[in-house]
Length: 304
Image (cartoon, rainbow, N blue to C red; front, side, top):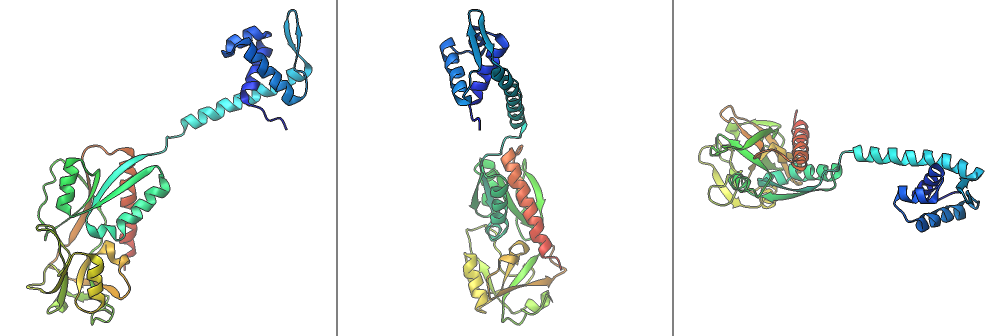
């Protein structure tokens, strides 16, 4: 099998077309000595003489002429391949800082990052977990490129002047109870059933919104105030109280905890949005697309 560098084929083609080592070397930008060595290497690889040298220049032998025809086809295919590769879109790359409130880290964010990593390996996503007001400050300061924000009638009205916000499917607010709790076997309960229950609520910095008691329950009885979700779920699984979770976290509940829907006409619910400032870069747009798709898939799995 003939296995040679394409440059040797270019040298052959140039000598055949110009009929002169001098002219061919000038065309290719090599010295005549270097070009002669390339022809010699090609002859050694083929095991046959490719040119006859004479006082009036060089003439290709029958083998040289035949190989020159094949070389032209091969080099043309190299050129086509090169153009096709140049026409391919460049792979996305870069670092994107994504902010989100803690419950987004239970399922939505890790699944979205995994999707980005599979589709665009050169895009690196850094996740910064914090409350919605902190994410808005980071977004305005340029510390994050994208931020997942929560909004609702029980939350403050955030100042989003100059901020683009795209709604994300988030699902309804749900009740999380222990597997042995009296409500565990119900798919949906009226809000009146929650009266007298003990609540495991979130704990964070002053002004940071938390999940905890059902929003319309008057004077809820708080039995524990815990900052970490795993600790809250541990208390719930042990039957020490119940808590609320967003629908996007329902599939991430640990063993011993189940979710229940609540029928509450007085509760308009919370919503979730993806925020950014200015135009999205291509890597940021890829992260956005992954979040939108994963939020949709999570919300669809919660449909009855």
